[in-house]
Image (tube, rainbow, N blue to C red; front, side, top):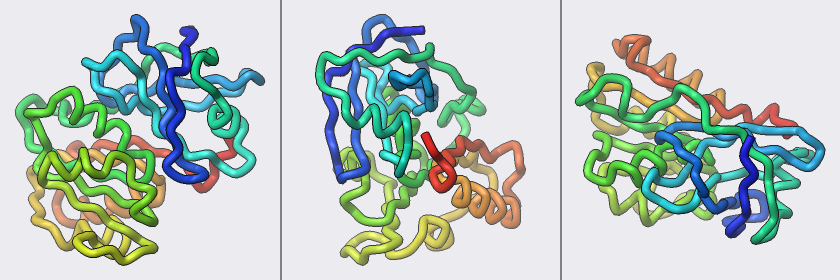
Length: 221
């Protein structure tokens, strides 16, 4: 167990925020998760969004209605202490097969492990990164993602110039596709199920589809 010190809390919307901690001696790989605990000893896993070379730990969090952990974390202030597990998990964007081509697909705060990868490996960008949110204001680090190139944003509830209007599953049908690429998916469970089925129906082997699922719709933490 680690005791982390809050550096900052940055809200994007009333329910979406980035929680930053002093890193201390925490070591991790892009794609790793950390379980953050509330004062009631409830915990929830969150993917690290920071790069391995940064001196802070970043987490992208959606405050869930009636959520015990997410609501408590949203009330933290700089200097507060939060109990956390050691980094864990098997999801490793871009690392399934060394040298293989990859595509990243995320919804909501599921962009976190991909931001961690891109910040850690700025010269090893994926073939494509697709990101789906409801409205543009909900997109974390949009300028940073756009600067990497090969990035496309899908907005399901808002029409904005230069961005796809619709769900990220629809955007996938509009971009170049190849069956020999490794696909990394992170976000809402329904999105991952739909895209996994679409990819398999288009000839992508099951072993080339890598998943990290967030259960937003059913979450109570």
